[in-house]
Length: 55
Ligand SMILES: [Zn+2]
Image 1 (cartoon, rainbow, N blue to C red):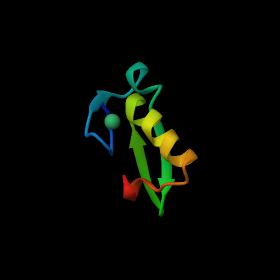
Image 2: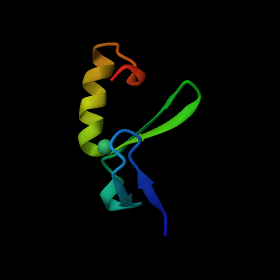
Image 3: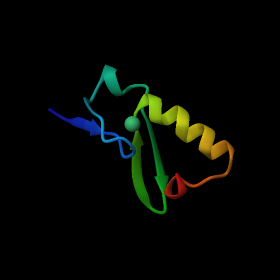
């Protein structure tokens, strides 16, 4: 069984329906995964041109 782990808050969910709303992105060559709630925060940060390293 595979699980996804949020790279921001550390939340873990079983891969599948629970993680459909999660976001993955590649930053500085590394794959990052964000849960639904962190994705919203992340999108706001991206709109503000802020890198996640500076959260
Ligand atoms: Zn999260």
